[in-house]
Amino acid sequence: MAAKIKQALDRKKQNGNDSTESSESPDSTPAEKPDIPAPPDVAAVPKDAEKSESGLAWKVLQEGEGDIRPSRYDIVTLDHTGWTPDGRMFASSQKPGSKRRGILQDFGRSWIEGVQLMLPGEKRRFWVPGKLAYGEAEVDDANVRPDRPKGMVVFDIELVEFQPGPRPPEDVAEIPKNAQKSKSGLAWRVLQEGSGKEHPTPESRVFVHYVGWTTDGKLVDASVGLGRAATFVVNTSPPGWQEALQMMVVGEERRVWIPEDLAYAGQSGRPTGMLVYDIELLSFQN
Figure 1 (tube, one colour):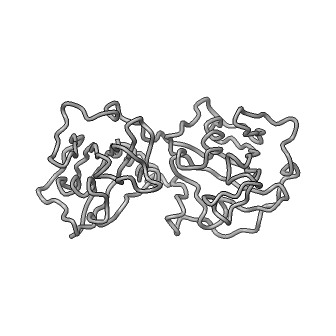
Figure 2 (figure 1 turned 90 degrees about the vertical axis):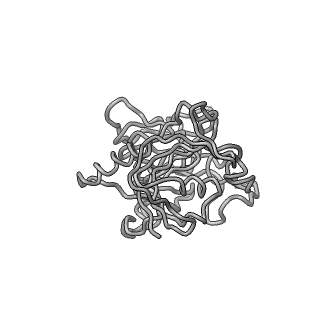
Figure 3 (figure 1 turned 30 degrees about the vertical axis):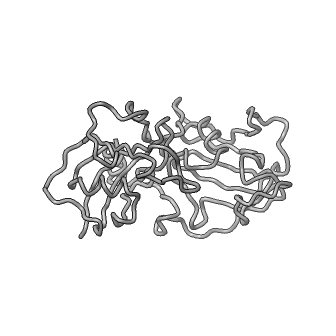
């Protein structure tokens, strides 16, 4: 799966149509531009706006094309600008370090809901209540970043394009009977054979594409949304990753079922329970 998505992204780059990636890629961020003036209706939700049960409100500013909308697992490219109700711009895809491209599920709750309503090329103005954004104004939440506004915020979002993203595999819920298993409890299936005989060592720097899910199919993390490989030293990854990578050869793709004690072992803010990853080893350096 990771390989197929990577190939689609590679073809897109070869066609000269690659989009700006996340804030982790400094060369891909656009140049600094002046703040965009706030529209006249940022102070309150207008009467002609549509509204969902969650409290999210919107107006369509520009119609899109086609009839297919993205799912939460798709890779989206977005242009956006955000204002507070008093007209202060606090976010924009025109600003360096702003995320424009990624798997939709990795964006905020209101964006996940709102963007799934949109068609490619469509632009909407969203009025986002604090509970769906960065917290309510009257609630002191230690988990909210201090540089983010509390209370209602307003976003203009354009869905530039989207591509199919990683869907959970059919065998994500439990280890299948045809999987191999080690003494540690790690299980795996080879999805694509690799080449060569050398394996990474604990000190090797690996270059991989990966997608990860919980056993109920929730996307945990993925490198494919960035359109480039992830790289790290093997012994800096969780134990299950270390074990799996040292069994692989270049070009190989495996689906691995990693028990919780070999994954994040109850670390705060990390997914719990067994995790399932599709990992493709692109290359490594010793």
